[in-house]
Structures are given as C-alpha cells and as structure tokens.
Length: 389
Ligand SMILES: Cc1cc2nc3c(=O)[nH]c(=O)nc-3n(C[C@H](O)[C@H](O)[C@H](O)COP(=O)(O)OP(=O)(O)OC[C@H]3O[C@@H](n4cnc5c(N)ncnc54)[C@H](O)[C@@H]3O)c2cc1C
Image: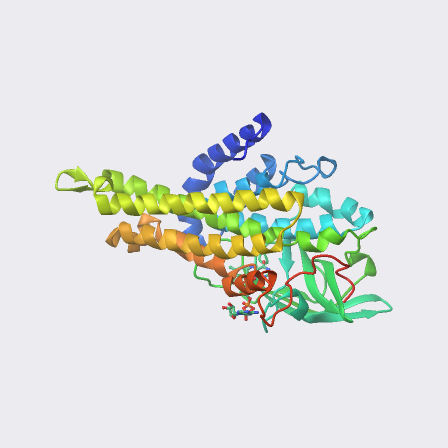
C-alpha cells in the first residue's frame, strides 16, 4: 500500500481536475485532427506535471518516481496520446539527467522542465530496434565533432519536438547525442506525422540525419559515471506500463457508465450476472496492474530489479489489451462505433505492447533473468559504463 503525502495528494487532485475539465473535452477533436492542442501541453507545464519528479534546482518539484507514473496514469484515463508525448519528452530529459555533464544539465534541463522546448528520443532503427547489444551505428567521430548519418523511425513528438536525443553506436561505443531540430541535415518525415492505428496526436514520424555535424559537446557524457545510470533507462518501461494502466481505467469507467444506464427487461444491464462478472474481471485486472506498476516503481527507486521491470511491462500492457477489448465487447455494437469513444482505448493499448520493446522481447529478458538457457543478451548492462563495450 502506498501512502501519499499531503503535497502529493494536492498534485493528484489538480491532475484529476485538469483531466476532467480540460483533457476530456478535447479528445473528440484530437481524434479527428490527429493533433494534441499545444495549450494542453502548456497547461501540463504550468501545473507542474511535466517536471513533477525532476530536481527543484532545474525547475521540477523533486517528487518521488511514483508521481511520474501517476501523472501518466491519470492523463491516460482520457488521452493516452498526450501521456505518450510526455513520456517521450521525459525520455529525452532523463537521458540528460542521467548521462549529461553538469554543463549539459545546466544548458538544457531547465528549458525542458519548464517546457520552453519539447524533447524526443530517437532510438528505433528501420532495421529493428532490438536490444542494447544490437544497437546500430549512427555516425562517426571527426576532427570537427560528430558526423551523423542515420534514419530513425516511429519517433514520438517528431512532428513538434525542438530537440532530439539520437541514440546508437559510434566506433563501437553506445552514444546518446543531442541534436536541435533546426540543425542542417536533420529532416523530420515527409508528411511529418505517420498515419497510425492509435495514439492519435502523439506526433509519430521519421527523423532522417544526413551528414549532420554537431560539436563533441553534444555527446552526453557524465562528469562521473554512475553504474546505476545505464539501467535507469528501464524506468521508461514503467512509464508505458502506467499509460496502459490509465487507459484500462478509462475503458472500465466508460463501460460502467454505459452498462449502468442501459436497460434490459426493465433492469440495468450492469446488474446482469454475466455483465457484472465481466466488470468485476476488468476491475480485478486493473488492480493487479496497479499493484505491479506501483510496486515495481517503488522497488526500482531503491534498487532496480530487471526481472520485475520486464515482467511488469509485459504483463501490464498485455492486460490493458484484454481489458480494453472486453470494454468494446460489453458495449455491444456501440463499442464498435467511434462515437462511443471506447474502441480507441484498445488501439492505444496495442501500442503499449509494442512501444519500448514488444512483449516477446521483455518475456525473453525475464527468461534470461531466470537463468533459463535462452540465447539472448541483457537489454541494458546492469552495471558498467554504457560507453564501454
Ligand atoms: C506509436 C509508436 C511510438 C513510438 N515511439 C518511439 C520513440 O519515441 N522513439 C523510438 O526510438 N522508438 C519509438 N517507437 C518504436 C518502438 O519502440 C519499436 O517499434 C519497438 O521497440 C519494436 O521495434 P521494431 O519496430 O523495430 O520491431 P522488431 O524489433 O523488428 O520486432 C518485430 C517482432 O519481432 C519480435 N522480436 C524482435 N526481437 C525479438 C527478440 N529478441 N526476441 C523475441 N522476439 C523478438 C517482436 O516481438 C516483434 O513482434 C514507437 C513505436 C510506436 C508504434
């Protein structure tokens, strides 16, 4: 059981008010236009949700990690795509937080936390994202700095991000490099936004870097290497799990609302044993998901447990698919209609099982952690310098 402080309760209260009063009414338009209005992003910044867990010296609230997950969970109840955008922005911000030098932190962190600039994280290669050990080359070191030549695909926020952390191998070293959007040679996908199944509005697209030259100061290098930092990136698996949890709650709430007013033989359908059982099943799965996300986040804060993190990402996102599919079915024909607004949760849930590495990859990592004789390598080095291969 997690106890929230009074300060945390206040953040949760303002989050819920923001989601109910500002996010929920905007969703039909977002689904239609495939764009999250910038004013929603600005409000997230203004209310402190973007920087809730970043240190106060960089403009954040300095709260514990669970609060990041709560932000994503609450927003995902109505708009998982907005939560995914925040997640991608956090990936960029965390790269700087964990791997940046003091000078790099001073230069970028406050701007990202105050939302003056939007970040994105570009890791996925067109030939497959794979695991850490399979990361692809992205360029070379030259006497003028770093020359980047690579394509990155399915990049969240690519249609509006101001800065990208480009991730890949250079001369056999695992590198994360900051590249501004307006750098010569960087082009964001032809039509800017990919036409995709769900997560409408999260600005997914291709980022192409052709002979992009940036100074060496753009390579993220910590002043002092902390062996835990490489593994900290696994925190992103808990972010996407929190999104999966939130959208399941959204799908469940819609189902309860619908079945509590729909009548059959003079009685509300929510009272029919088979329907009540399905609602109970959905709610039980949601509580299992919450236990996994919250517990693993708390454990992660103390000492990362790879098995638990991979298992959480795999199970929670798959359960979100189950819950959101059942939500469609128990709405009957209405569930299949876009106007009802329940089908979109299922589309978004499927994205959660694929993004930040698919379920099979995470289960393979669980098997590896269990010591089973699988031919696989750890997704991230648990300790050791990520720049040394
Ligand atoms: C909406 C959306 C937003 C995204 N945002 C970002 C972003 O912001 N930044 C970014 O870098 N990427 C992003 N991605 C990319 C995403 O992380 C990758 O698509 C995902 O990790 C899968 O990689 P892949 O597409 O290369 O598939 P592949 O790695 O080619 O995998 C294809 C299939 O093979 C299976 N498979 C692959 N490897 C293994 C293995 N080792 N063991 C068992 N099975 C395996 C997988 O289960 C999968 O079903 C986004 C994707 C989507 C859909």
